[in-house]
Length: 385
Image: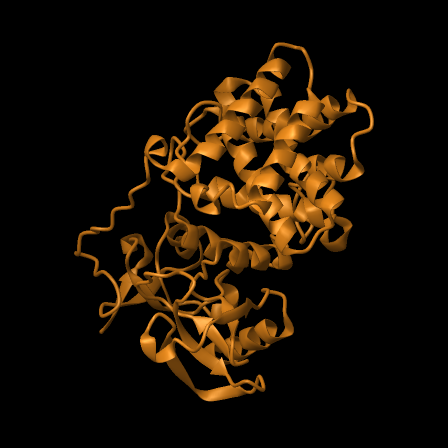
């Protein structure tokens, strides 16, 4: 049963099935989806006045929200121990900078290389990234997380050993300049003022200044620290680069940094779960984030958000569907094209977690900038006109 409501009545857990705007005008990849985050609600309120919800698939206006997300206690999760150790080591590097002794680049390089080695030897789990509550130094917390993600992504994209190592070092040091900001800004729970945002942007130059005091820093490390806030559409900073002007390592670290920020608990909001964060990155690509880096991150984490398009092991194409998922690597899907990549006139819903489809698996994720995705968007736009 569909019900039309005002956007002021939106809440997480509702299933969106229609809006008062053309789909092409909205910054969402899927036309129908379960509302999972405050960010999605805020976006709908910016663009729409009324929407329709499906009561058979989600909450009604008067229905209370019962969803509770629990996060593990780091002290009780053994797989988080390597992350705690790396963070403690990096805190020493940061404390040295705070006391005016400068950057111990050799120590930072050792930590990044040990993270790469731990990933190669399966001595560290990516599952520890989600739900790792902030304990101690915020910069150390984020930097180690981003280093782990970037190194895993570099391995997925078959970087050479040297390029992988340099990417990992750059990821570990990418937010080094935050140490120069006043604590009142770093720990602020309310929205930053325009002046404070400008101050935050200066952390890039401050990080480069710290690197400049070290001799023979690899160019990739410098590029990552300088360009990780640049965006493919040219809307990033500090140089307003676009597309291929931004090196791939910097684009990767930019994606990893935003993903980590979405997962992390903050003073003003709880962190998102993996599927929410990945869905946001996928929908915002390729304009705001590098499409190949986002696709690689989703494949590394083996969690497929609703709305993304995958190629199955039989060559057919499917769109990941909404629904309860016990195994995020085997979600419910809607087959939209056959093995010859011909669009189906009638979609077929399959659940990869069911025994009946045990012979099928996800072979790869289609990056958001692939031609087939653009074709789907064109068809969807025509249907909504």
